[in-house]
Image 1 (cartoon, helix red, strand yellow):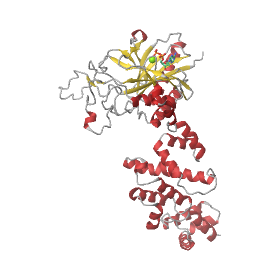
Image 2: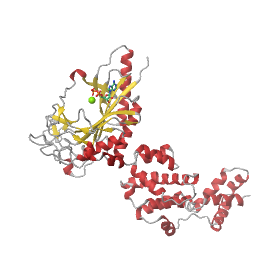
Image 3: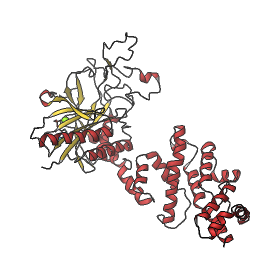
Length: 493
Ligand code: ADP
Ligand code: MG
């Protein structure tokens, strides 16, 4: 029997707004606070107020920026914006949920429909995040080393959380990973979230079944790798059960990364009834007041459009293009630099233009990015401007310098911000093409290496490379290799 995997994803995204969803407490963009710079950001229960702590008598006020962010995601993914949308209460008890209910959206989500990579989207709605429980005592020593309590941090409580639900259109673990990565990129392009999985900005749950049969929900997925592995494991487990004539139980299973398997967490019988009802403190509202047409027209160029345009405009391979697509600031830098390259040909897409663009790509993504990484900056924060890099590449393309000098000059620009031509003049790094100087060196090398000369004359072509190498050494790498080759060939005729 053949089985077709049927997989749907539920994706939660913490939105990068200034304040929380229903109050003006600051929205800490780094909820795990791994990289928090200030001590105050690491302090638990710092970004809280009576509203997000669920005190009685407080009133929620929806965050317009968060609603706009969800609308922009919906428009970017081709969804329909509900003309009227509303919030609902989802009731359940858990110690990280101070109100005893979560404000979410039930039957009128902000976005319905849409499509990404051929996967239909069911809905995108907005809700509030919960607090965070710490089961490991943070100051264990002070408490006598005993795990005698759990702690709760409400800094995350009330942070705007977008939930996107797909139809079960995904057909493999790999496809699920590609979908999730592309969604992450779109969220980053839109600037609505940093969508960093490690920091919990982007959280994935997968629902997997075979032939649309009983589904199993997969939780505790903390990376794209885990997403792929959990789905692959689960599909195989289900197939083996069916082959043995057993039934799939509808349940939630957690991914155990260390052991590489899913483990049952709870079955459908224990499923919650959330008793949704309309949030009485927030009336339904019309989305048209937010200016949907303007929002649509102000969307940035999205990854797929950029991919197609870059492939068309520049002489790059798909994998080179992808390096730029996943890093918008490098992509912008590349484009800015390409526009500064000297024109070599009337046709912008000629082979020679393409070759120079590829050279630029290589210097940007290996050499400049190498320097940038050392200093933990972005390319735009360095003293090397796109103009500098373009001029440097022009010098190489015109045969005025070679890669060894180019790398040296790039480092100097990085340090001083001086123009490449200026550095070239000052440091005398010109490639030596002038025949007088080269001829002397060639004569010396021929005198000093009679064996190689004899070999070459007997027809051993490799000896020519050896002789050129010797000459290069004497010229400290600055000899023009084409000119040297010509001189040797002529002298040894
Ligand atoms: P629930 O009521 O259990 O939350 P939903 O119908 O709301 O289930 O769907 C939740 C997610 O599960 C969606 O992403 C959906 O695409 C996916 N899903 C639904 N039915 C199946 C199925 N038979 N196999 C795989 N995924 C499914
Ligand atoms: Mg659901």
